[in-house]
Image 1: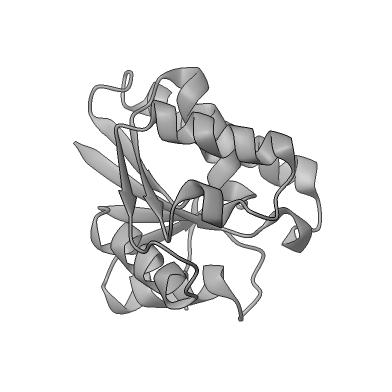
Image 2: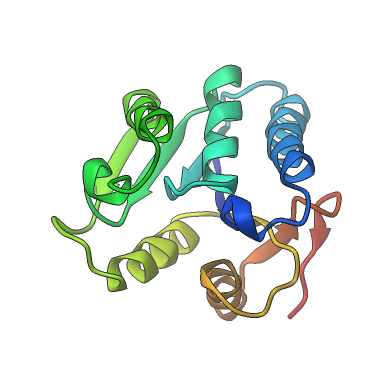
Length: 163
């Protein structure tokens, strides 16, 4: 089975949120088609708002399995989210093939651990990255680069990312 790790910005970091959201859905549908279905395909997702959420929506719609890596329990991660965003994280947990939680309370280090585990447990990475060389998405891409993972940008027709 091919496991694809996902990393990407939160909604407010995208120049065009609608375009980014569509790219997330299109990438999942393309990979389902390319792999003749979902039998040999799985994703590793981080449960964050933005790219993680949009890829999860597409996975649920297309019945693609995924593992959800959470830095802490869903109610802690989504404490300051809207009610609908909180509800969708619970939906993601319900549909996930597996949910791994790495801490019982908030700790920023757990985000880094989560991102490293997504990279380490994936064959390659698809990022939804606008080129900002700071923040969690960039740090995850840098880590994947150091680990020798293929990194493709879902915002640029799956063009390889070279740091």
